[in-house]
Length: 157
Image 1: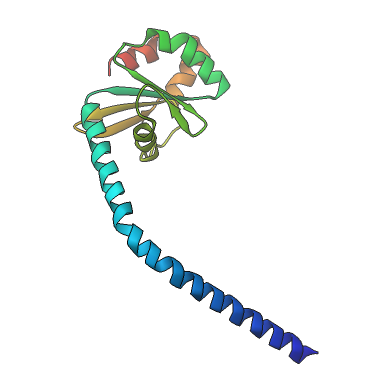
Image 2 (image 1 turned 120 degrees about the vertical axis):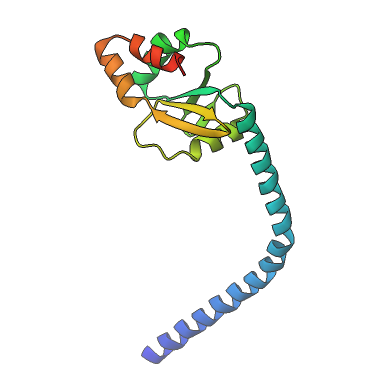
C-alpha cells in the first residue's frame, strides 16, 4: 500500500514537471517577442512623466484623503482659501482625483517615501518633487479651530 502511494506521488510530480516545462516553453517565446514593446512603453511613460514634472515645475500640490474628519476640515476651512495656483489632489482610496492626468499624479504619489501621514504638500522644484507631511499641523489646526496658521504655510509655497 505504501509503495502504491509513493508511485502515485512520483507520477504526480512528474506530470506537474512536464506540464510546467511545457507551459514555460510556450510562454517564454511570447515573452521574448513582447519584451521590446514592454520596454518601449516603459521608456515612453518615463519620458512623458519627466515632461509632466518639468511642466509642473514650481507648482504646489495639496494632497488629502477621504478620512472623514480631515476631509471635512480641509474642504470647509482650507480649500476655499487656497491660492488659485495650488493644485488639489483628493486621494479617493488609491485613486487620485484632480484636474491632472491620473497616471502621472498616481506615479508622483507612489514614488514618495514620506514619514508622516496625509495631507501632503508637494512642491515640484527643478523637476523633482519635495514632499512635506502636514498631518500634525492640520490636526493642531483642527484641535485649535484655527486654520490660519496652516493656510499661511500652504499659501506661502
